[in-house]
Amino acid sequence: MTRVRLHDKDFETFIPEADLSAAIDRVAADVSAAYQGKQPLFVGVLNGAFFFASELLKRVTIECEITFVKVASYHGTRSTGKVSQLIGLNERIEGRHVVVLEDIVDTGHTIRHIMDILAERRPASVTIATMLYKPDAYKQDVPITYVALEIPNEFVVGSGLDHDGLGRNLRGIYKIVEKKALVESDQSIA
Ligand code: IMP
Ligand code: MG
Image (cartoon, rainbow, N blue to C red; front, side, top):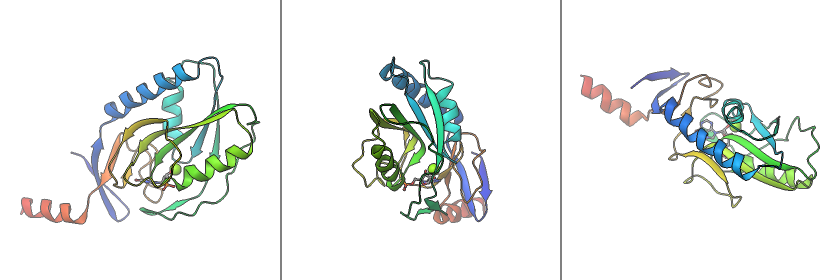
């Protein structure tokens, strides 16, 4: 098991790169089947979704477009629940089939905000595709249509996800090592 330290926190291997890749394969196949002939517009949510957007798009087999937006909603290891505006959405949304691409859906505040803004622009449809989903943390009723992997309510990094800016480049997914687990492993070494 690989362990890495990012700022003040330790993280250990959680989801191997191959498992994540296989999960993204499944989402790409589902999306390609569902949007055949609809020329969907994928909207990746920066910064975190750059990895998922890239991995998903190279597997999608149908005609499609992609654009990126940015929201600022999260600091440190806990969701603030505060979301600022959506930056960079210049495409015409009206009448389009939109698929929002997220790195992770946690409480759902971010996705709720994005869905509200997109709805004002009268798309033909909007769905969400996320790399990771924490069902135990989710507090919204917006359906999350495409999920690569569900995870427990723990803080994770890697494959686009960060801890205060670090860890986005890690392969696969790493989860935070709780203090208790650290003490136990220290004792087992002693
Ligand atoms: P939500 O608004 O609570 O659903 O949080 C969504 C955003 O918070 C994601 O797009 C991430 O940027 C960030 N986030 C939530 N959980 C994690 C995590 O476990 N690791 C890193 N970032 C996270
Ligand atoms: Mg994000």
